[in-house]
Amino acid sequence: MSPKTTPAKEEHERNTEIALFRYGLIASLLFSPLPAGQVEGLLRQIASQPYTIPYSSRKRVGISTLRRYLKDYQQGGFDALRPQERSDKGVPRALAVEVVEKAIALREEQPTRTTAMIVNILKQDEDLKLKLDQPLNVHTLTTHLRLHSKTRRLLANTGRTFQRFERQHANSLWQGDMMFGPWLPDPNQPGKKRRAHLFCFIDDHSRLVPYAEFFFDEALPCMERVLKVGILRRGKPLAIYVDNGPVYASNQFRAACASLGIQKIHAAPYSPEGKGKIERMFLNVRLQFLPEVEVSEISTLAELNESFWAWLECVYHRAVHRETEQTPLERYQQGLDNIRPADPEILRKAFLWRETRTVRKDGCIELQGNRYQVDPHLAGRKLELRFDPFDLSRMEVFLDGISLGQAIVLLQGREKHISVEHLATQPLPPPKPKSSLDYLAALRTEYQALQRKQAGQLHFALLPPIQEN
Image (cartoon, rainbow, N blue to C red; front, side, top):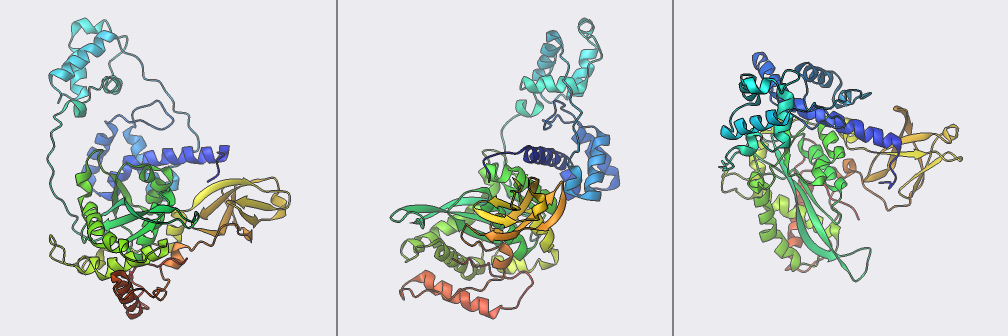
C-alpha cells in the first residue's frame, strides 16, 4: 500500500513472520490429530530437524518450546504465537576442520546415516578427541553438514515416482492457482488492451470450483478475495494446496490461513504433477470457454466474469467427470455433512490489511486518496488502520492495539468497491442484448434462470457472485 514502512509496521510484520514460523512447526499436530502416545514421537521428530528461524541464528527448537507453541495456539489462536520480545540469539560454535571433514566422509560413505550416528562414530575416533575442546553436539554437526550440502535428503536418490491421490471428502483440500486469460480493452487507456488473469480454487475431491474470478491485476488481494468468497459460499477447506509463488508465500496470506485454521501446503518446486486437477480444469477453460470469448462481443471484465460464471455453473459443474463418473456438483453435494461453515466476522478480520497513519491537526487521516475523520483529540497520534482493500468504505482504527471503532468517510477518491460479503448474495443483472448466435449470451440467460430458481437458498449457494461495474 504505502511506499513507506513505519517502525510499527516493521514490528508487526516481524512478529507475524515469527508467528508463522511457529505455526508451521505445530501445523501437523493441528491438522492431523494423533493418539496421545504418538504425539510425543512427532514432537521429537520435529525438534530433531534444523530450521532457519526468523530473526535468530539458532537452528533448533526444543520439545518443551514446541509444547508451549501448541498450548498457546490452542488457547489463544494464531495471535498467541506472536512474540513480545526476542532475546534468544546465539551463534553456532565452530568445529575443527578435521572433525567436519571426517563427518562429511562418513555421510558420503553412507548417506542414510543419521547425524546422531555420525556423532557416535566420531566419539570412538581417538585421533579426533584431541580436536574437540568440548563434547560434540548433534545440532552443531547437523548445521555444518547442511552448510556443506551433505544432508541425507540432498545425497539420497533423487529418482521419484508419483501416485494419483484424491481426498476422501469435499472441502478436505482445495487446489489454487492462476492462469493467463484473454486480452480485453483497457478501461483506463483507450485504444489499448490489457490481459486478464483467472484466479481459481478447485475442490480436490469433487472437482467443483468454490470460486474463481478474472482480474486485470495479479496482485495479492486477488487471490485473497477468491479464497474469501469461496469460503463464504462453500465453507472452510481443511487445507489448500498452492505453489511457491510470492502471492501464496506472503505473510498476509499465510497469517489469514493460520487465523482461519486452514493448513497451507506448498507444492514441491518443479513438481507440477501435484496440481494436476486444477491444471486439467484450466485446460477445460482454454478448450471450451476461451475460444467462445474470442468470437463473442465481450469487451469488459464484468462481462467476462459474468460469462465465465455462467459457463462454470451451466456447463462445467454439470458435466460428468471421466474419472469420478459424477458431475462436480453432485459429488460435492454428497459431502455437505463434512462442510465447515466460516464465521463471517472471523473471516472478515482474517483478511484485513493493516497500515499506519498519523492523524492530522484537523482530525483526518488519508489512505489511497480517501479521507477519514477520527476524534480530533487524536491529532498527531499514529493509528493503525485495518481494512478490506476491496471495500475502503469501512475503516477500523486502533491505538496501541486497542480498537477505537470506525473512522467516518469524508471523501472517497477511488471508484466504489463492492465488498465480498455483498457480492456473495448479489443477484445477476439482466444480460445485455447479444447476437442470437452468441453461445455465452445464451449461457448467461440460463444462468440467470438458475439464480431466480435458487433465490433464497442460503446454505452454500450453488452460484458464484456477480460483480457490478
